[in-house]
Length: 117
Image 1 (cartoon, rainbow, N blue to C red):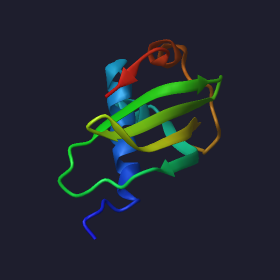
Image 2 (cartoon, helix red, strand yellow):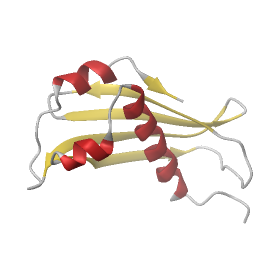
Image 3 (cartoon, rainbow, N blue to C red):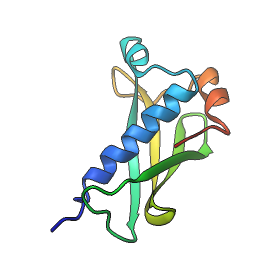
């Protein structure tokens, strides 16, 4: 059908999230080795127009809201400036046992006001 499958957008969102974390000096590998994990707890996605194979896409993410233990990221996928898809994803930080834990201050301070493109 030449269109990008809807499930692929979630890979793009994750790539943007990793780049955002990297931009503030974060390191997922080190964080996970220390026993902390970021998990998706809610995802709302609005498909506006399809992306096609071989399109050059721009993916952006910014933190919409942050609390003691959760973050809401807002994502946009564009082609030549035209909005194709937007999503809000709520993330939480958990420990090895699966319990929600507070987001460390250095992550909170670094992520506020930072965007990844």
